[in-house]
Image (cartoon, rainbow, N blue to C red):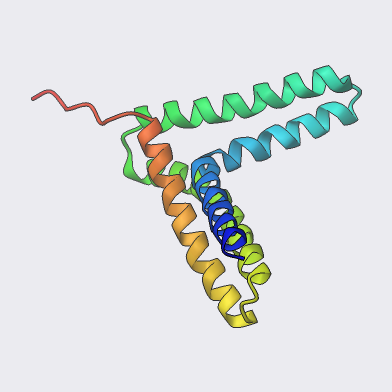
Amino acid sequence: MFVSALLSVIGLGFLCWLLFSLAVYALPFFVAITAGYYAFESGAGPIGTVAVALLGGAIVLVLGQVAFATIRSPIIRLALGALYALPAGLAGFHAVKGLSQAGGAGEIWTLVFATVGAIIVGVTAWVRIASLAGPESPHPL
């Protein structure tokens, strides 16, 4: 019984770590899946589909990092950060909701936990996309 409970806690901890580590990639993953789906539907075949999906996701990730690092306007940076953080927050909401439902929480508490999880995962994605862009360069005087 103790070993089962210990392994359950370790498994949940691993899933939470994985969720936080991969949160910043929610938007590129969505773009990759969408591009791959359209490529497959247009007759690209399995290899072409995978190539289009990988290329599409990589382009979105790299363009987001470059744009976040080079654009200095706070409003545009806020919009870019939100563009990456909102899909991650949505993924975090559903992941935490599923975990809390599996844990037997009531309906209200499931939504409370899911909302808190969405906020935490969204903020984590925001911080990660900002850190992937690199440190701010000092302005010359």
